[in-house]
Amino acid sequence: MNSWRPGLLLLALIALLAGCAGQQQLVHEETRLVALAGPPPAPAPWPAFLLPGWQQPHNRIGQVRARPLRGGRERIYVDGARPLIYHATMPFATARGRYVNQVYRVHFPAIPFSLVPFHLSAGRNVGLLVVITFDEQQLPLLVTTVNGCGCYVAIIPTNFLPAAAYPPDWPALSQEVYGETLPARLTFGPGHGRLLVTVRPETHRVQALAGTTAADLASFFLVAARLQPLASLTRLPLGPAGETSFYYQSWPLRGHVKGGVKIWESLLLGLISLDGLVGMDKEYGGSGANPFYTSLKPWNRHASDMNDFPRFLIFHGWRL
Image (cartoon, rainbow, N blue to C red; front, side):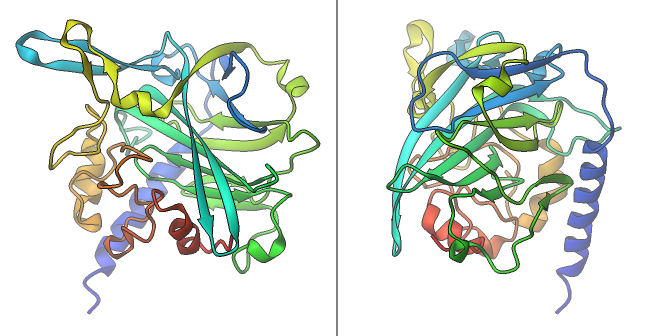
């Protein structure tokens, strides 16, 4: 009856080691603020990404690109020299109202392999999603951040969300997300300002979130990023070969990011999650054939799937 306990203890130990490693004080020579170069695609706030450690290519947000190889093969990679943010608008409805998610997805070339500190999620083509939920009055209600594998999900309410929509016993000041301390609430002023997303170097975890203004961001060294539709990730130019997708198209890898195998996560968490591909980045907002689950427990795979956002919110205790 208690056969599951060793697995959960192992998972807790892994999370503790990765979290403690991520919290070590790091010294970085450079920091860049990556923000949209053109007019915003949606109501404010829209995110700007603060990236310490910019001197290391793997810490840069880039464009997903494809290159044909001999024998009909291809190489999918993230070009950090071309900053780019992918965006989509995704409406949804619940019994209480109609809402719109503004989805922003970014990718990094890699999380480098490291034993000290231990990088559990080491691998290529890793991503990060920021989802801002608006009501029919275009007021931002929730900010959801999650890594491209469905890991480390955090949901933060704003000052516009009614108290009745909160989960029971929601903390007053901060929340712990697998070793990172994030705010329990975000405050946006008139015009709704900007959302500053600070990304921890190496692991590309969300390290901090804050509502801010364009004036407050002026002190950072800006790197302008272009915007492309999220759907363009399924139509990457491949030279004379035509187009290809960022995601595998056939079983058993269907819906996972090409080149995104996470060796350590597969070895250490595959049995616990009953998913040998655990940790690989996935498509979000596509066919939904591959659940974008946010809970490692196999019995929660579909209830925690962000592709069904109303059910995802209910699973995590929110009442929109």
